[in-house]
Image (cartoon, rainbow, N blue to C red; front, side):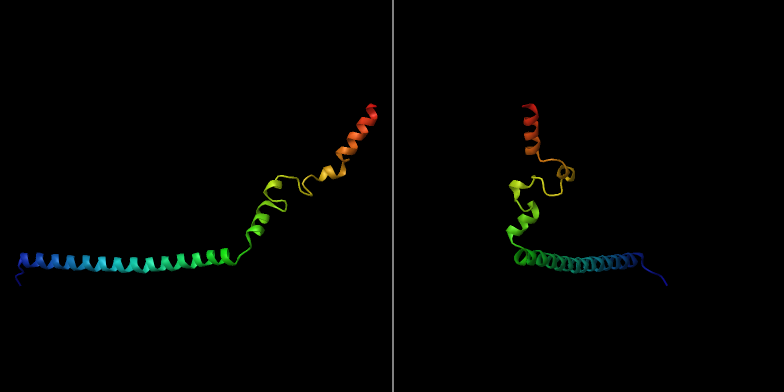
Length: 104
C-alpha cells in the first residue's frame, strides 16, 4: 500500500488537534470540579466561623478570657500564686513598721 505523505501529515495533524481539544476539555472539567470543591470547603468553613461568632460567647466573656478577671487595665497585676515565696515573708507594711521602730 502506497500512503500519501501529505495525507498522513494531515491525518496526524488532525489527530494532534483532537488530542489537544480533549486535553483542554479535560483540564476545564477538572478545574470546574476542583473549584466547586474549594467553594464548598470555603462555605463550610465560613459557616462554622459565622456560627461561632453569632452563637458563641459574648464580647464581655471573651475579653475576660483574654485579659483576666480585672480586665485590660489590671492584666499585668500580680495574681494569687504568682509569687509563692512572698506569702511566706512578712507583709511590706509590717516590715516598714518594724524598721521604723528599730530606727527610733
